[in-house]
Amino acid sequence: MEKHDYELVHLLPHLQRSIKVRNPNLTDLSPPEEKVRNYPADRAFRIVHGLVDLLDSWKAGSEKTWVLACDGLDRAGHIGGVFFRELLRRRGRQMRLMLLAAVAPGGEPVVRKILGQRSLMKCLAVELPEAAPEPVNREVFAQAALDLDFFVAEDRLRLQIHLVEILRMARLGRLPDLEFKWKVRALEIYSTLGLYADALVYGEDVQATIATNLKPVHESVQWAIFLKLNICYLGLGQAETARQLAEEMALKEKEFAKPEWRCQLCYLLAMLHARYLPRRNTEKAEVYLDEGLRILDEATDLAEDKLNFQYAFNRNGLAMVRHFQGRFEEAIRLCELSQERLEKHLAGDRHRLHRSALLYNLSQVYAVIGEQTKGISYLSAAIEKDPNYSEYYNDRGNLYLRLRQPVEACRDYLKAIELSPPYCEVNTNLGQCYRLMGQFDAAYHAYSVAVDLDPYQSLAYAGRAQCHDAMGRLPEAIADYSAALSLEPDQWDLLASRAVALYGVGDLAASLCDLDQAIKLEPESADLYQNRAVALGELGRSEEAARDLETYLRLQPHAGDRGEVAVQIIALRGLAMDEARHLGDSQPE
Image 1 (spheres, rainbow, N blue to C red):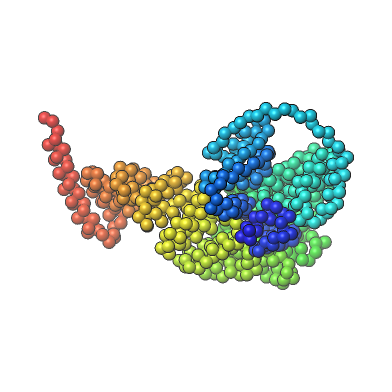
Image 2: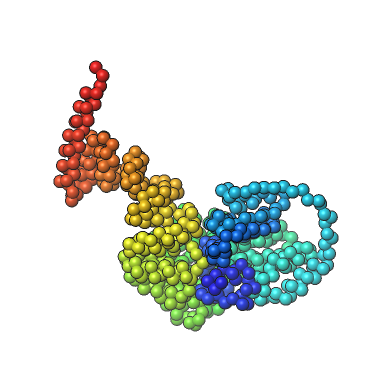
């Protein structure tokens, strides 16, 4: 249970009273006004996979079938639906699970969509007698909603526990103002937890309520709604929708008196153009950042600490732009100046999260310009400030791996796995690390975990195929190469590797087919021609094999085996003449 503490308190918030999360990071611990980092979109799916692993270990060794009864699966939230889908996909057969889902009439297609088209479903329609609807006592529900609203107040834990209950009671009690208030809170709480799709349900609902102009909303509430919606859209990869929302907000910028908000809006627009939109426009991003700085310079009533933080935050954004522009020295200097400003003007316990992010940004710039050791140094400093952030260890492991230091990389990947619910990327990286060390069994296991978590990752299949190859398991290697190629069919190197494995099991025709396709994709790779020459030669196509070896020598003029290959060409040409003579002798007169 301790291993899955993080997942359990997300699933059942009241457990926070009895379970202490062992490894909170600064994204969890920072006060709302200092949360400059949102969870990556896959964090929510990691929670789901952690819960699947918990059930798997709980049932381990039992041959009994579990029947899971779920009422109203067609009305499940996004992450709830993902849980049932991933549980059945990953462990349905292994754990002997059966899902019994009761849905309303017409709910079958919704459940099929939730569980995925490949799920096995049998549907049974049952005609139930219609019961007379129970009368709803509006006054009772309204009073219960008001009592619960008073009880929860500003207690964040109570908010998480009673959120859905309050919303239901406010709806049945016909208290639209209270329902609106708690939908705004739902948007805030779910987006903070990284449950962006579920948060968006509430966020778009409150946006629609505001748009009807039926209710005046304070500018601070509108601003909070905008920020959280922006986070959700970006987290879900909907950058164009985020841009439209930000530009709509910019049109009514004068309604917002606070320069801090206007500066922040400029920053968000800059990041959209520099980082998120499909067509990057760093020049436009820089214009927005400069405009944000101008607003700060004219702000006379902004507290000194807020002014310095916003200034550092803005220049950190410009550092990212410079990074994307390839002006790396300027990017480094801007990060250093932002760091110095925070150190000079803010108390040491303020904005610890942003301080760690600045160090991380410096590490990324140094990594891009090839100074991996400096990158590791800055990432280590970021880890010192935020020692429980899994992603930092994964990134530092990647830098160690680039330096061909697999022992250190492996240590960091294992730490990243310890600090987070399971995720595909770090297990794939761990597999790469073990494979580099020649530990093929361990690498195979790491890749298998990655594939189990996400069956649409070609790198994990390719890595596992190479492990099979190294251990002489050629049929298994061919299956994994094929799985990788089904996801990325234009990977010439995977085609070449599968061709070698196919040759090893004696399937020369299929091997040749893969090599033909690989050469079409990468016609300047000399080794491909040499490999194809081997297959052609064994198929009795000696002249074609000789031509491929000549192409190999043309592409590799200084090849170490040049003399040996020249002898092979002569031999192949002799065989080609024999083949032609034999073919002529066998023709009917």
